[in-house]
Image 1 (cartoon, one colour):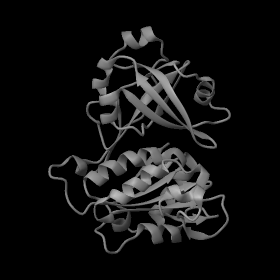
Image 2: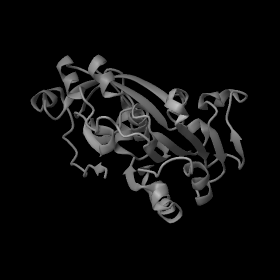
Image 3: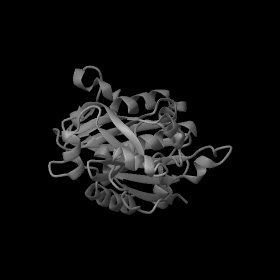
Image 4: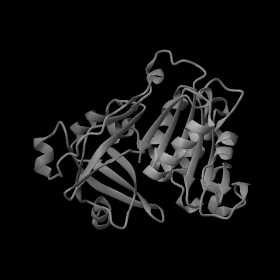
Length: 289
């Protein structure tokens, strides 16, 4: 069974001195870049200040992992979209963060300027998938993913490990509109390079008009989705789940991972347990994002 890490207390907010004094727990970092990804989400790139701190990222602790970001007296957990290999090599850490109108960390990030000091923790375990740690990795592994909003970031980590294991993965990714979709290029690249086309996914666009289409280059703003199916004007429901997640040609599902905000997670977990058989859902794991 998967091992899901228990919640941990937030670390203290950073100063450069604090990061040095608590080197084992907090690592000094500078804000290097900010890039808008959607109307309410930005990509933040941090640079570790000390080259020696890169060693903390030398090995990913699990298939899904996170770190603490501390800035201006506030600390929050985030899942990097960069890999531990990226950080070990370059010292760069990339985070995709949704900004909320009344969020404490959102306020800090809205005021942040390039060069501002922050601190990060070393990697922490979010979810271990024991099958991925076996050598050789078992063949025929199958997984379901349901992502909502920034919950796609942990799913990206999972997908990278699943691709390396030549596993089969079906995913539903729910967001308001196509303009709100995050990491679309990364998902497209994974789908295109996946062994035996073993990764398929669909967008669920809850605030767009009700029609099912294949998103492609005929719609210039949407070509980045790489031909993924898109269902509009609906939330994830039982029929959609069975259409996109159930594949009779594949082996029994090892695990279904639900990753998103709490309301999305509660709804999807109930749908999964009510409408998919044990063989179609496997172990059900819910991650708040």
